[in-house]
Image 1 (cartoon, one colour):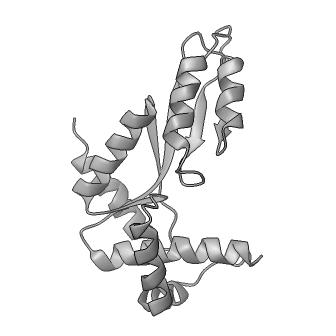
Image 2 (tube, one colour):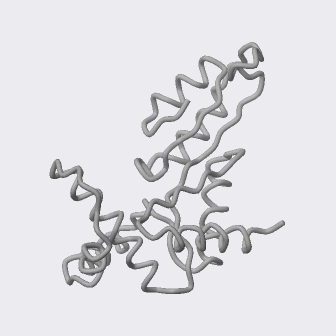
Length: 172
């Protein structure tokens, strides 16, 4: 059961199902909701169709890792611009030049500073070491069995490099 509100994990717990929580949609409640899922889990029949006798959960996290500060900035700008467009009812694909211009804008830089000051952790971005440390902490805090890294972005090579960097820095 994938959810971004308390309902999905509660439903999964009561019905003996696996739970996955979309952290980037509701980061302020993600770890708490998954811990509650584990505490309130009621076993269901292990029927091969998702029913479980033991709780199992995953946390889905929007993440991007790079030693290139510009790449990190553009990833964050692309996500912020996507969310702004969705809020305005704009459902068109972003263009790379549009994301670059927004990343360089004073508006984006100010909003980024405000969000960071407020502790908004909707995205886990930065150097590979920092990203891995924050991802491991989120997984641990959520008591999640698995971590799902989601990296939407326009630059395929940067996305692949981010996944590779996270994998290379993940403890074995």
